[in-house]
Length: 300
Image (cartoon, rainbow, N blue to C red; front, side, top):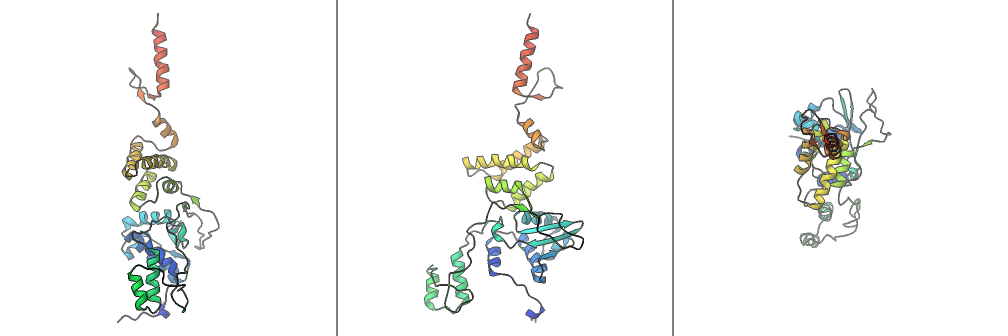
C-alpha cells in the first residue's frame, strides 16, 4: 500500500500559483510539461529544472514530435523561461503570472472559487451552505491563515492575463557550470506583441502556424505587417477567421517574400511589359513612362 510521507520530499507552492495554473487554458500537453518542470525545479528546492533531452518529456506523455512546439509556445506566452546551451536545456517557471499570455478557461469565477475554498477551509454551517448554493458569495471577511471566520480578503488574481509583456528569455546566459544570470533584459518578441496588440490572445495552433513562417525564413516584421492587416479586418468583421491571416502569409511565402524590401516590391502594381517576356515587373508609373517614351520614338 502506498504511504507517501512529507519527509520523503514535497513541493512548496503558493495557492495563488495553483489557482493561476488551474484557471488558464493550457492544453493537456502544456500542463504535463509544466508539471515536470515544477517537479524538477521547485520540487527539488531549486529555481530551475535541468532536462538534458527534449525526449525526456515523454515521461509525462508528451511525444518528442510535439515537445519543441509546446515549449516554444509556453516560452512565448511568458509561462516559462528556456535557456539553451549546446545540448543542455534549463527551464524556469515564471511565477509572475500577470506576465502570462494565456487566456482564462471558460466558466472561471473567482468569487465562486473563494466560496469553495472557504467552505473547505472552515467548518461550514447550513446557512453558509445555503448561501453558497443560492449563489451568494458574500460569506465573510478574511479566510487565509485565520480562525475568525470566513474571509474574502485574499490576494486578487487578474481578471484577464496581461497582453503587453511579451518577452523571450535570453538564450545565451548559461555558464559552463549551468549557473544562470537573470540580470540582462530579455528581447521583445515583436510577433507575439503585435498579435496581442492588434488581434488578441493567441492559441497554440495559431502560434504554431506563425512559428512555421518564421522557420521558413520570413522576417518577423513581415509577419507583423500581415498581423496588422488581419487586425484591421477583424475590426471590420470580428468573425474573420485566423485563416485570413494564414492565407496572406502563405501567398507571400509562395511569392518568395521573406523581408520588407521584397514585400514592398511585391506590393507594387505589377504588369509585364508587352512584347518583352524577359522583362521583370515594373510599377504602374514606370510602365506609363515606358509607353510614353515608345510613343515619342514612333512619332514622325
